[in-house]
Length: 226
Image (cartoon, rainbow, N blue to C red; front, side, top):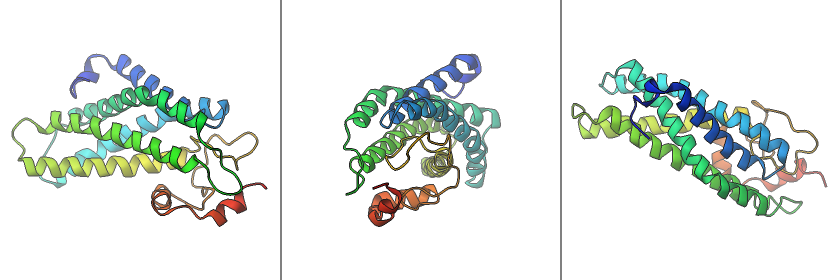
């Protein structure tokens, strides 16, 4: 990865790298269910990263200004795009691992979610780590010129990380399904939008809470066809 100005010199190549890397990871996580999920996730993962880049680029600018540091708008937008290009490249390297885990996990059944919860959690961790590493690099590029105190640079970077997780997570929730579960039979919808999950979560933040505390198996059994 180069700096924030990378995309200015080769926008077409950078866009192709983002789309290809994200598509590879999307295909891998969707293949844990079947090829329909695999191809649809391969389309939706680039949309997820591009959409988050656009939304977060604006939010990064406002956050930095609120914390007392003015940044050039074009540099912030370029850095946001480069951040998610870098994330996509890192995720593409993890795609074989996700594909293996998805094809070998214990399938959900009447007695529980099997390996599905762990599979989703591992891939959410992959996304978080890849995004955090890419964000760290771009934040250092934008804030490392020496004119920003270290404490303020850390505060700005921390806020950017939280924004990225919050925005990207909710957009991913709206674009789901990416992974697929056994209770979804037949041809799955391309996206579910604000519809609740099989465990009753109605947004990304409830999903995180459920994975942290354990999903309600009674809700799961009402959805799962016996």
